[in-house]
Image (tube, rainbow over all chains, first blue to last red; front, side):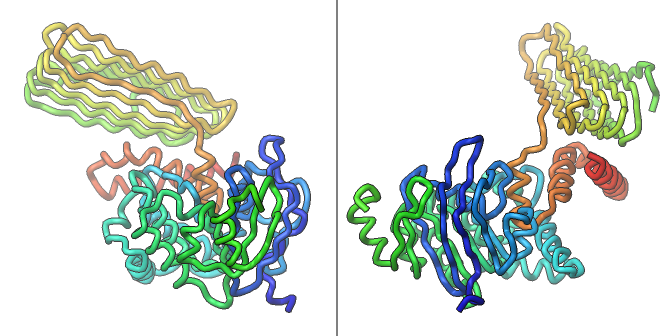
Amino acid sequence: MANDILLKIEGLRASVEDKEILKGVDLTIRKGEIHAVMGPNGAGKSTLSAVLAGKPQFTVTAGSIEFLGQDLLAMSPEERAWAGIFLSFQYPVEIPGVTITNFMKTAVNAHRAGKGLEPLKAGDFLKLMREKMAFVQMKPEFAKREVNVGFSGGEKKRNEIFQMAMLDPTLAILDETDSGLDVDALRIVANGVNALHTPEKAAIVITHYQRLLDYIVPDVVHVLKDGRIVKTAGKELVAEIEEKGYDNL
Amino acid sequence: MINGRQQTIVVEKGANVNIIIIVFPGVSCDVKLDVRLAGEGAEANIYGAYVCGGAERVKISVDMCHNVHHCNSRQLFKGIAGGESRVDFYGKIIVAKDAQKTEAYQENHNLLLSEKAKVDTKPQLEIYADDVKCSHGATIGRLNEEEQFYMRSRGITLEDAKVLQMISFISPVLENITAETERVAVAAEFESHIRNIIRNI
């Protein structure tokens, strides 16, 4: 059914500093689906996620992206976030001097303003914070820390999933969320992603390895190689990649 | 604020002085401080925050003289220069020959918002004693675009992202305003000025 389509990417080409990274990507994601995008280093996986989130340093030279029927490429990064897109960063950015509480309050209220809603009342906001912090097993002190400053690898990724829980996106893009995680943190993050998933939402899990996909089981698996999707199949493709490697696909 | 005339502050034995210099947008000034730590255990803390968005000329000069032993000084100046403004910071720490066990720190950090704004910072150390802890540092940078994209990807508008970056940049200075009402008022005034500056870029 056409109205099940959340995201439709067609013929997407993108460059950074005049170097073409994505060389014609087609990808359709329907409600309720989890897609894995796998591929060797340098294939363009992170570029795909950055282009979806609207990173200004990337230039789209051809193709289109439709998200819930809207022209995503015409939207600013913040408009994309309001529309329901969330990118979990491979390398979450440190923001010295800005506490998690202040950061999230600004973000949550910006989302509300984008939808024409009043800012959340202080009490309701703190209640939401506490609930979502518990969800990713963050201690209460976490709220007062500066965004990602001095965080361990695991804390940074849990912070990403915490933010995702706070903002409740329709399409979550997880860019190498497994990198730098020990098995306990991996489990917390994966459980978080699974718990947030509903039949109305979708997720793109970008990863180099099988590991994360043992916990977040994809419906569709794509292999991205040299800026193109070279193979698409069901979850059985993960095991095939693990066995044969990317070179022999 | 006294413009152009040098203010001399003598800090005697066991005394301390805390000075906070606040320069709001639209204000040009020429502040010259000559601080003399003249008695054992004297302490001076000087903080400054300036935000310029137009054609302001902000000059700040501090001579921090450690004349005797066991004195402490700390200086932190942070500022933002946009528009066609010009900031000159000159800070000198002078440690006399007999001023052993001195601890003196000075930092000046700046954000440039436009091509036409100019910041000139000259941190200086003049040390004649040999048992001291002194450091100084100065930086001039621009708003970090990776931070901006991270915030925008969470739905924070570009304008709010810049306000957050700039407020957080000067807040280490404002934190030293001990009276809460004044601290909140100064921060709020800076924020509304900063928002105006961003809208006019």
